[in-house]
Figure (spheres, rainbow, N blue to C red):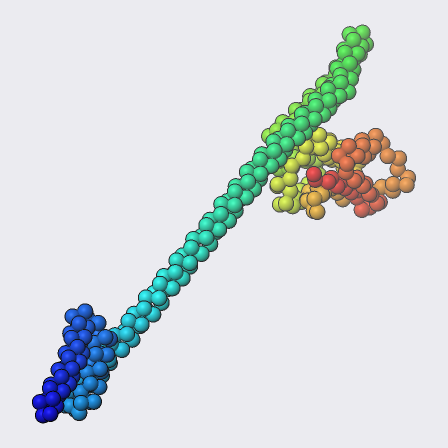
Length: 347
């Protein structure tokens, strides 16, 4: 009986020993495999195994190993999770950056497309302006050329008319008087020929002066006016002065208006010299509100317009003013002299 109990105890010890060896073998397997979670589990199993057998020292030792390893494994898991989260964050950040970069590229492409469109529009607009400007300049040149040709044609017609009317008639008169001088009183007719030829030369000089481009400025007109006034008024002891506004310096008149203005002026000065009994004549020239103002005023005896019949001189002045599209006025009062005014629109 004792032997049987001994045998049973030995078998039990062998079984227990086998269980312990199995657990230790599983532990070694986990250690060799590097499975720290499995290793911690095997530590826990060994701790329970020894606690059941009241081997508390071993049970406590394996329990400590189990807890230490479990903390380490959990810490690594936390770190692994943190690393995964960080990788996910970096991945999402990178994706967002890529998306932003694509968006920036799209915006840049859109902005570049707009710039190209704007550049095309600006270039088209500039080319249109240049083309339109060129057409307008060309049109202006054509119209200006046509205007000059029309003006030139008018000048030619006026010259032809003046030559026919003034010089032609004067030459005819000279021819008739020359024939009369051969058969009648030579001295009388020669004096008339001299007067007519002098008048013809003066008229020819006026025509040449009016068509000369160097006399386009109003300053040249004023200069010729002063020369004529000096020739006509000074020998008769009549003083004269010009009241000219500085604004007239930039004024230009057409050759036709310049000629008519000067001839009208000559008529007014001749009348003042011959009929006014004046001691002073004042000539005024100014520009106001796109209108050229011209006046001749003498301090002579004047006359009553209701009683004095106007001659051809005044009619000629009115006709010349009408030719210039101007407004002509002629006023006089006994004892207060005579004044002539002319207003010409500047175009």
